Each structure stands twice: as structure tokens, then as C-alpha cells.
Image 1 (cartoon, rainbow, N blue to C red):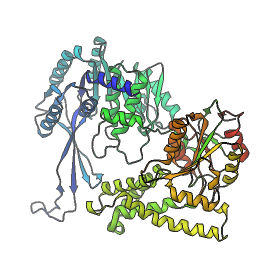
Image 2 (image 1 turned 45 degrees about the horizontal axis):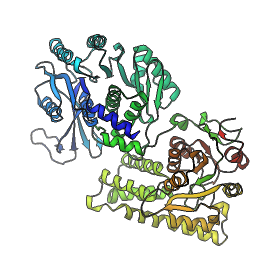
Image 3 (image 1 turned 120 degrees about the vertical axis):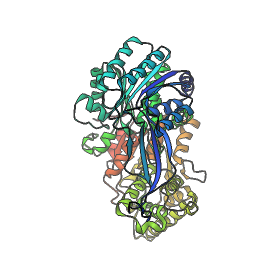
Image 4 (image 1 turned 60 degrees about the vertical axis):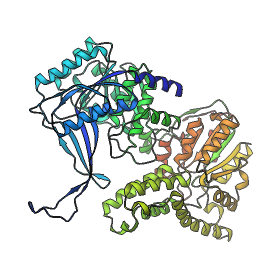
Length: 636
């Protein structure tokens, strides 16, 4: 895809693109309400603000995204006033070498639009909107349309934006736009309109699930539900007599062109996200790709990647550059089956068993290699590590302020920490500590010189954890506890069954390799892994990725000959990348058997084809996974 992407971006750079609609700026500034200073004039407490950061917003963010994609010829059409925000808006547009001859002043009844966002620490306070009471003068709007129509013969793409309560483009303006569409067939028209899209015809419309329900006058529907999203996208496409790009938040996008549906899942993120501006990125990238003659599947994929980049840019209206899109495309993992993951009642099981079939998997060859995770997949020596890591991270982030945190502040922070831990389960410990360091810096409870390195945080965590592990190993060696107390039910027999089948068996863990070898040896199954025991090393690279790369690239093993088994998203995502059959073990580590619903959800979202609670149903697992006569995974 790399060569194809470069060709598309080259074509995008040569496009001539127009943007018409509601132009605004986004203004961010830090706000301190607790100053202790009382105004002599009002007797009220004085609030203090820091320096303002301004970004192009609304239709302006469409311009920002086109500029980031490399479009060199951008023409803008809209209204503004000669006021503070209007002058800043013009400056930001002209700074990007945008043609602003279609931006006209309206002196009365119009304030330049701005979204002013005070930041109380890391959270946005009440937003202050300017321009909410605008009323476009019919003559000034007509003058804008005249500028547009004069330029349209030279444009390859026109993106239409309507965002404000009192927009430039109302129902009457939409009728005029429909007329332009009929008379300028050479130009691709694409729109993102919050309130007046229902009147559009033959214009590609970007809409999220809420906007779609509003246009169709139906009840809201779940953006995670693939089937319902497909149905609604088709209905909207028929209603508008035009293609529809349906955005589904973290669950990806769908495109319906009145005849055929195209779909792509959302991109997996390990860190915190902010959805501001993602819709602008989606329509800008998708429209530019189609105007550059990319096929629909490629355009959808690139728009999806671009939006995934935008949401990682916090406290700003982000954009996605060509190089960022190309980089993500080389190492991208997706979110799978979110609706099923959140609804265990919809699970489908294999032959009246506890083995859930999430996604059917066809293979033409029997398995030759199995790669197993360790902690939570085989061993529970480290059971409780999540709680230890959570408490340690909370202390490291907040420092001396931990005891004074407000309950809601502590809850918010705990949620962020749990998300980081859940998303990185199975990754090398250093990766989790790098995530911790990012949070320490971003949450800013500590002074910049108080933060430790990721390596120092890792050493602290391992000191806490290994005390617990050593105590458990000692009790096992004394005979106070037994193998079944520290392993998932049935795993010993499953490992022996794999060895009897002469299938290569690898152990790959995110835990440091020395510890994995020590713990597997102590529990007596280290020699069972003829492919070796692989864990994290100082280079910080994933042992699971290394093992799978060795199998597929060095030994030339096809993905369908590999089975990956694990309880963390990390190994499942790596298995999906190489086309392996991915078995998620949603193990209850405390009981050592039975289903953990939280693990089930994250494993399905990571891409597991099969979910098992443990290895107790050994005969069925053998029949489903290892039998040469069973070369497909499906419900019976």
C-alpha cells in the first residue's frame, strides 16, 4: 500500500479545493479560578488566565486538515466581521497560504465565530461561544455565492460545512447548492452539516450516528452495532440520493453509495484520546482521496487512519499529516466486534460448550506452532498485578497530593490508569511504564524535575510485585501449595496434548525474560516449550512480535499454521497482524477457572476469534483447534 499511498498523496497535493461554510477559531487558555485576589471594583474573586492558543475551527479546521494533507490550492468562502476573532481568523488562514478572496465582511448582525475553551488544569471548563446569534445578510451571502460560482469551474472538490445554530448555509442556501451540483458535474461535492443536511441531494454527506438518526427522524442507535449501522447508512443514502460516510467514533467508518456498503473498523489506541475535530479530518481526507481518484476502499482506509491520528492530539483541534498517516499504516491494529464485546448475552458457543466463537476462521493447513502468553494464560503467580500497578501509578502521578485529591478527581484518574493497564496488558512492562511517564507529565501534579524515568518506574513496580511472587514460589516449594493453585485449570494437560501432537510450542511474555524462565522452571513446565521461553529484554521490543516475526519471516510459516493463545490484548493484536488463529483466554485468575467478563470484552475488541475461560473442556479444544480434520473455526 505504501507506493499507492504516495501516489495518492501526490495527486492530493495537486488538487484545487474549496471550503464554504461556518468558519471559526478555537481558543484555548489556562484558567485559575482560585487566586484569592478580590477585585476592588466588583468585590468578586479575580480569575487569572494564561496565554491563548488559537486554531482554525469548524470550516477552518477543514482547511487545516487539507493543508496538513498537502493540498496547496485552497479557496475559502464565508462571512466574518472586522473584529478581534475575525482578524485572527484571517491571519490563521493566510498563514497557511489560503486564498481568502471569498471571505467577505458583514458589518452588522454578524460576529466572527469563536469557541473559547478555558482549561482548568487538564479539564475544559464551560465553553464560551461567540457568533451564536449571527444573521447572514442575504446580499452578503449572495456575494459569497457569486465568489464561489466564479471559482467552481477550477475546483476539483468543494467541502460544505454547517455547524452553527445560526449558520451561513440555511435551507434556502442548500437549494442553491443543489443547483450548483447539477451545473458543475466535474467537481466533487462533500458536506458535513449538522442541522440542514436533509435538503441536500447528490452530495456526499459525512454524518455520525446521532446526526443520521436526526435526519432520518428515528431513535438513536448504537454506533458499535455493525448491522444497525449498515441499515441506517443505507437508509440515509437512499433518502439523500447520494453517498454517505457514516463515522462511528472509535468503531471506525462506513461508506454507502446507494448500492454497496464499505466498512472499516476503528483503530486501537493505548493512550488517552480526544475526539474533537475527528469528523473534520474524516471528511477532508475521504473527500480529498476521492477527488484524487483513489478507490473507495483506499480512501476509507486513509480517512480512518487520519481520524485515528487526530484523536491522539489532546487539548487542540488536531490534524493528520501525510507522514503520520503513512507511519500508522505500517503498524496499525484495529478494534473488533465492539457490540458483541459489550453484550455477552449475544455470544455464540461451540457445540453447547463454554467455548465462544467470536469470528469464523478458515484455514487450509493444520497448525504447526502455538505461541502462548504466560501470566493469566498459564500461570497465576502474578495474580493481583493490576491492582499493584494501579496503586503504584496513582502514587507516582499524584505524589504528595494523593491524600488531598477530591473523590471525583481520584475517580477520573483511576479510570485513566485502569484504561492504560487494560489496553497494554501483555505488552513489555517498560511500555506500561512509558505510559505512566506520559501520564505523570500530562496530569502535571508533580514539578517537571520530580518525574522519574520509565526505567526507574519499572524498577519500583517490580520491587513491589516480585516480593509477592517470591512468597508464592516459596510456599509452592515447601509443599504448602500445589501446581493447580498457581495455574489455569487444565493448562498442564493442554500443554501435554500439544507436545503429543508434535506441534511447536513457544512461550512469549511481556514480563522480563529472566523472571519468566525462573517462574516456569519453578512450576515445572519450562522444558515443555521446545520453541523456547521468550520475555521482555532491555531493548523494550515485544517478545510476542519477535516470536511471530521469526515464525513468519525467518521460518516462512503461514499465519494459518499458527495459533496464538493469551489473556491480554497485546498477543491477540500481534496474532491478528500475521493472520494467526487467536484464542483469548478470559481467565478468572483468582479462582483459576471460569469466565472473567472484563477480559472477555477487551480480548474480543483486540481481535480474538475464540474466547475460552480455561482449558477444562480439553476434548473440544482438541477437536476445534488441533484436529487435522477440523480446518475451520465455526459454530456447529
